[in-house]
Length: 65
Image (cartoon, rainbow, N blue to C red):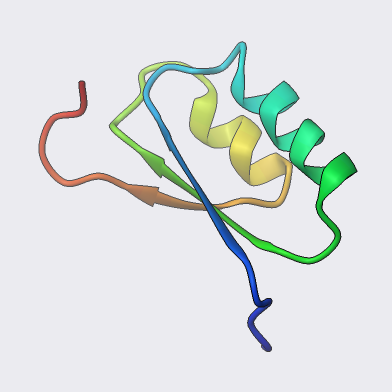
């Protein structure tokens, strides 16, 4: 797997309403990038949505804000 020259990191907690539109917007303006969502242990569908849209999801250790 080759890495793209640009990495985008999104930090999120319970952002199921906003994470999808944000990732979709990135897809329209960036051609080649690696997307990482760092999740602060969301209790909604943030993680599922981000993964479905192709993001690598990392779970934050400890408590998110």
